[in-house]
Length: 251
Length: 351
Figure 1 (tube, rainbow over the protein chains, first blue to last red):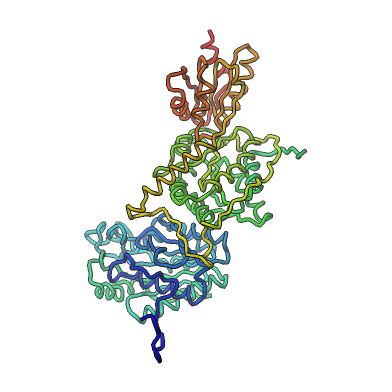
Figure 2 (spheres, rainbow over the protein chains, first blue to last red):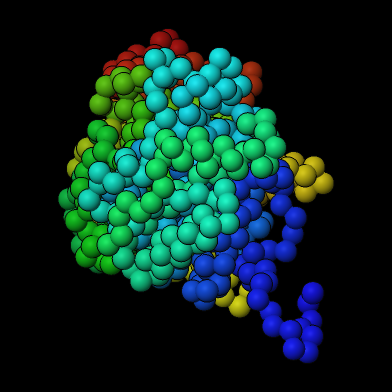
């Protein structure tokens, strides 16, 4: 409802930074929620006209169509390096590197670690849905032990391919990052917590504090072969038990 | 009169880049061009610029991409194996039409090869080492002075056409010291405000991306636009040098460091009464096909001399067809071509 009727108070609306177009995401996918959280925070901090978002290769490859700010493409895994280049030229702009699990923890592991280690004053938003979504459901570095995917049809076998990597714990060994938090978007209370983490991570950059990192445990009902609700439940039970939620660092 | 300095090639190209307005340099160490990073690490803070040693060649070319998208004059440098690692980034820079300068001080290959100068990356530079239909402007200097001068030219060309310009030198050129006069900054101004990403203040947000999934406004349209741009560059930006070509009967064709050695051979041949000349392409892409044909059409013979197995040779054949006999002399693995051998091969024909 666009017009406010007499006596009615607007309590919820689309953030200006969230473009009013249908997304290509599947029903039950977490990307839309996470995009919205990011857009809401950009609005709240008054940064919409000072933002460059870096889109990854993965399901969020077209995210610049959904975020109403300047947007730039990065090759697979290189979003933090691209973000570094933008930020070094425009230190007073908000630069957000938005990445998935294959992008951030497989092909782009070096960029992830070194950008964090430099304490680059950017924000990395990491969407962990334990699978490669865009390419049709292959095993990700974060797929759980035993998880069946297109490339682990008998279940992820840790004896052959190792255990899933925990990004927050890995980055928490570095000196430079100022903020590291893992949250989840599988239900409303967790989404509200995720909003607070997102705001802190972006606010840190605006205040020039340094590298901030938020991991979102998210859903991929399509490639997990589950209903939206079952996928959300799976995050809340299976993923959360391997990937503990909470703040790892807040300086 | 500007002061003549004695400078090493790697340092000369670094200072010239700074003169040209480069303020964002990202690179990863590799021999034989490490002096560029060392020079930039010292000089960039003095001029308010950014030097960043990246975690990899891949990261450094992607930092360049980000800096270019944000409107910075930016450069990376490396040598052959490192340039191979940058190929994906070069393709993305082409696909997004971002301007950047990339220096390749070529060394012996394939593989890890060795650390001296070679010319084995001609194909990679001029025919596209990355994926997709794209071109870079490729400039091949043959002296320390020209390294510096072409650095200034390279930034202007990149900004003018929104394209990557590669300066294709080699380990010998990078390591040698020669006298030079530092170039003056270019007077050209480029307004990038219509396309850079700097936050959408008071305007519609912009997107810079090579991905296009809809056929009606798809990758074919991007390619057609790129090809139109490439035709324009071919029509306007060809550079070459003719040394004693006018009255020549035999013509050497060489680029970069090999061309220096050919110049010495031409001088010796002329002293011995052989009317030799040298055609030296300075732009390897766009290659001076027509200009070479005009210079070489009436020659008794053309000898292509390269420090590789015969790569530019293919472009020379494209230019000349069967109008002139073409011979080739090359050495690989960073071995130098020799004046005596060039003279022998020319004189063999004279008998």
